[in-house]
Image (tube, rainbow, N blue to C red):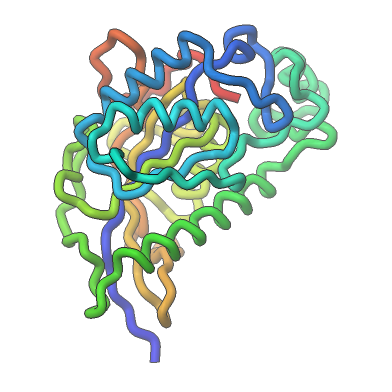
Amino acid sequence: LITFDMYIKKLFMSCSGETQYNKLGLLQGQAIDSPLSETGLQQAKAAGHYLKDVKFSHVFVSDMLRAQETADTIMKHNSSCLGLQKASDPLLKEKSFGIAEGKRMLDLKEMAKAAGQSFLNFTPPEGETQEQVKERVKEFMEKMLQQIGEEHWDDNGEDETSRETIPVEGNADDGVRGVLVHALVVTHGAYMVVAVKYFVEELHCPLPQGLDRARMFSLSPNTGLCRFILTITKEDGRQALTGRGPSSPSTCYCTSGVTNVRPGVQNQPAKGSNPAHGMNL
């Protein structure tokens, strides 16, 4: 017998802040594990202030230094994170750019052009393909769902969160006040592109009005934020995403485009644009 129960979980995805390599237009990928620059630390602080009223139940972060420092800074400015342990996960690492790591971003673009491919879809020698990164995204999602499900699904089969109306985009905590299951995921630019494409193309996640796919699938700025609402079911004792076909109810809603969080700026979710303020690779 398979029983189905449903709950709603909120998910914030954030890119790490700027490093000196970002500033110089150099690729980092996985081989170069650099700290945040002073600008990157200010960006992380701005993200922390923007998210200060959001009550997070979980924080998942890439095990790379720039993501760790971003997550630590965000958590420092959020009272709900006091005493909360972040979970470091290598599945959230940036995409590997192989032999292009440490080289100029321009070099990678020229390599892609010579191969007749787009910049984001090109795989340098010894690098990861988009499909390989997507498998990491899916593996992380499965791992995260099982952990959260074990912690928050009560004995009656219902999650501790309530079923609520899907909020429209707005402030960081709009529609999420009082929600117990709310995760922050801090990762990297190219990884985030693949994750967002997976949500939209395979989980059929609708986008906010006025935001097209081309904009949504472009590289996120440093500390760029996206918010998703995931619909989860319990199938034969395991947590699973629902709505896996185009005719099924959607498993996932994107409630804001990329928020370009910048120091000293009144930050709001982007509507129909994805401004390139420092790309995180």
